[in-house]
Length: 262
Image (cartoon, rainbow, N blue to C red):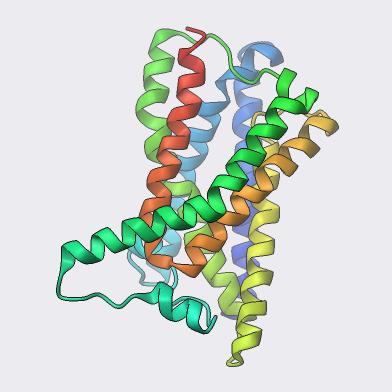
């Protein structure tokens, strides 16, 4: 990956942030700012649709199939000695056995890495006043609720993690990468750090509540979870579909927050 390509990749990260903010500002044009805030999932859906077309265009330029960022964004795991050998798990002749092993390994990684991050997120959201008291959902028309129910989980799973971890992350890592195994790990850390900066920036800008305390604590609460997701995908690239499925369930959890106040 040359310098022009990496500049293009970084520009795409910036473009996504701009798109998210613009869609929220557009929603605010049709009502008061407070009334527009609960509609943020639709700014998210619109952003994912635009980014989906961007991804299709960019992958077509590279002669890469869209499935490449959905199924296995990295060709191999990081060179981490025995851990890499354990995680690679070459397929055997028993397909059912392989599926069961992968499910067990995925659950183990979630238990060891994901659960602490989720618990920390929950603790912060319950105990930090600005996070606990800031309301980002509201009553929406029934048609809007069902539209969100049908679209948000699909487009979140289809685009968001594939955008950050499936498309951007591998290309940045390739730019920093060298033949040295230790430096390959360093390249991956640099790439993931850049991805997380932009991912966190997006997360604190939707909904667009420009309160410094809220933005800071939201970033703190989300960073461990987003970091764990990036690490899991990098360690076991074949788990990308499972992570996308979990993302769809997380989007459903957002929809349920609206259901509770219907």
